[in-house]
Length: 187
Image (cartoon, rainbow, N blue to C red; front, side):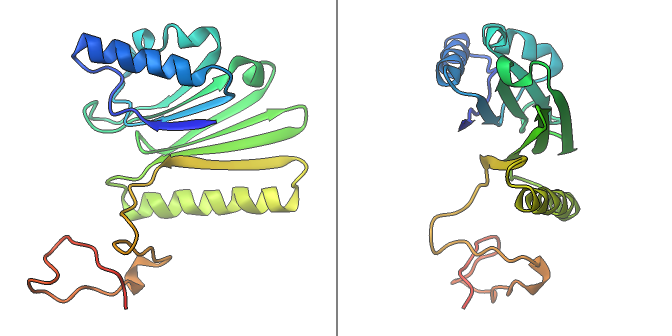
C-alpha cells in the first residue's frame, strides 16, 4: 500500500495534471491499495483522472463539497475487489473514508483520513467506528485486518500534543510567547 497527498488531481495546468496522473499510475503498479488525500476531484473530473488506472484498480471516492478543498480516494487492485463484498462508508465527505472488503471469509478494513477542518463530532464518530474495527480485528486476528492511513496534518516533534479528550487539553496563556492559533507543548 502507498498513501499520497496529491494536492489536486484535476489541476488546471495540463502539464502538471498529466504529471500527477502519471505518478498515480506509476505508484499503483504492483500495489494492492493506493490512498490519496486532497484529490480535489468531483464525479465529473473523476473519469479523466483515473481512466488509465481503471485497467488495474477500482476507485472509491469521497468528494469534498468544495472541489478546491479536500477529497479522499482509495484505489484497490481489481483482483482484490473481484467477487468481494465491498462496503464504502464516508463519515465526513472529502475528509474520512472507510472501506471494508470481505472475500473468502476474510475482512480487510481500510481507513483513509485527511485531517483538516474535521468537526469534533465527526472525528469522534470515526474514532468510535475505528475502535470497533480494531476490537473486531483483535478478537478475530485470522479473519479481520485494519489498515489506517492518510494525511494527519501533524506538526513537527515538540509542537503538537494529542489529547484523547480535547476538553482536557491545556489552553495556552495569551501573550507574545503564545500567539492565538499556535500550538504549544503541554507541560
